[in-house]
Amino acid sequence: MREVGTSTSGLVLKIDCEINSSLRLSIDEAIPIQGLCAVYGESGAGKTSLLRAIAGLNVYSGAYISYKDEIWQDKAHFKQTHKRNLAYVMQEANLLPHLTAKQNILFALKRRNQWNKKATSDNVEFQKVIELMGVGDCLDRYPVQLSGGEKQRVALARALLTQPDLLLLDEPLSALDDNRKAELLPYIELIKSELQSCILYVTHSKRELAKLADRVLMVEQGRYTLSEDIYSSLFPGDTALAKEVVFAAKVVAKEPKWGMQVLDIAGRQLRLKDSGERIGSAVNLCISAKDVSLSLERPERSSILNLLPATVISLQEMPDDFSIDVLLDVSGQRLWASISRFSAQQMSLEAGLDLWAQIKAAAIVA
Amino acid sequence: MLEAILLSVKLALLSTVLLLFIATFIYLVLPKQGILQNLVNTVMMLPLVLPPTVIGFYLLLFLSPQGPLASWQLAFTFEGLVIGSVIYSLPFVYQPIRNSIMAIENSHYELAAIMGAGPLDRFFSVTLPLARNGFIAAAIIGFAHTLGEFGVILMIGGNIPGETQVLSVLLYELVEVGDYPSAHKLSALLLLSSFCLLLLMSRFSESWLVKESATPAFKGGQN
Image (cartoon, rainbow over all chains, first blue to last red; front, side, top):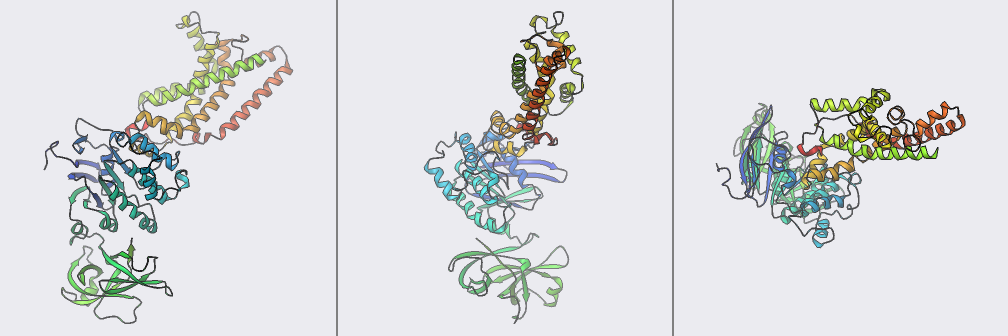
């Protein structure tokens, strides 16, 4: 444990406070400045409460928050929100309703540019970010005239332009449907590469996490732990979180007649619904455990097209007493299958068994 | 008659401007809950239920040559009328302002703070623009209500042409002396102007109907 005040740099968070009768927020970590730190956990685990505490919107007694050795909150000090050099993009409602998109951006620039003198509406920096975020057409419209995705992009452009020391992103994509989400994810990546400051990104999507995060702040029931090893945090052997895996795949052919496309995963071919990717483009394929079923023999004439030869690595009984999660090896990559205990017994599953994994559904993520 | 019309308009304009500032100031400095808030609110609401003559009577006592504020020499003067009007119309102006400010979502203040706006800045950049309709409605109702005032004015202002003889008082006198043609004209004028003002106000007054919401939890939210 670090002594209060002696730690150097980074975002230091020491909070141990009851938020409500059923949740206690407890964290004692120092988050390095460089890179994107995902905040991952189930809904209601206290993720937004943590971000609001960092922003100074919620005040928890006894908390210690400092950034780059500048104390934001301790027993004697409290730096108000408008004096903390941060940007905060929430799930929605990030724009003031009585200002146009451009006025909203300038609102922040005018007040934040004691830190960033460069940013005005007519310089190169501004134009570049507007172009990056694709919000050129939105600038003169009011929030009510913008779509959900446009509003979030304007808010992200504003966050990027103000060059904050700390960027808080609280599920900025959650209010959007899956297509929009996939569209916006690259913008978050852009922000990550453009902004040389600490980014906290709240998500409960493993897909987003796997793609963006350098480290992850896991939260369970309000208790936070920082981990630099994303993959073992994401797919630990022993938690009951939804088991999804991400495969690197490549689009190799299209079958317009059937509306399908063929993807290549480690030499094996999968057929999926054509969702418009170009032939030759690399995609990430997300497969969750519930969409994988198992068969001892290669099934013929099944409606399920996608078969992968697999070997059982281990079996894991789930707490519900009825289902079992099977960890598989598919040409060196891991895959989870969630099946019933009954089936597992019928098939006499055990480690080392070779079988076929049938992929019922898979989602292409950016 | 023109003199009385001009005097009424002057009184209403001046009172309205003062009322907008006073009502906003009271809302901002008044605690959002507790006994003090209840007391002040109740006192401010009194003109809604008291006969105007009661307010006028007490004002007269205060302002009369024997009263505690005699040195101000305000009884039976235009300035005295302004004071009376402000007190009498305060609840009508205060309510729409209060309702429209309270209807502003706390998240807007948080957003402004996140973008670097301090408390005073937030008042001008969030509160005023978002409560604009409430302020316009308050100004219209304040103007119209002052224009139609009678009892308070008669008590503390009397009936001095050019100084305290406003429309409503002149009308009373015209009827007293039996000048019905002039009384008709004046009444029609007041009726028409009141109707137009209320019609205009209905455009801005949705926030009158907004229900009271909980006190903002965000510390900087109220201003």
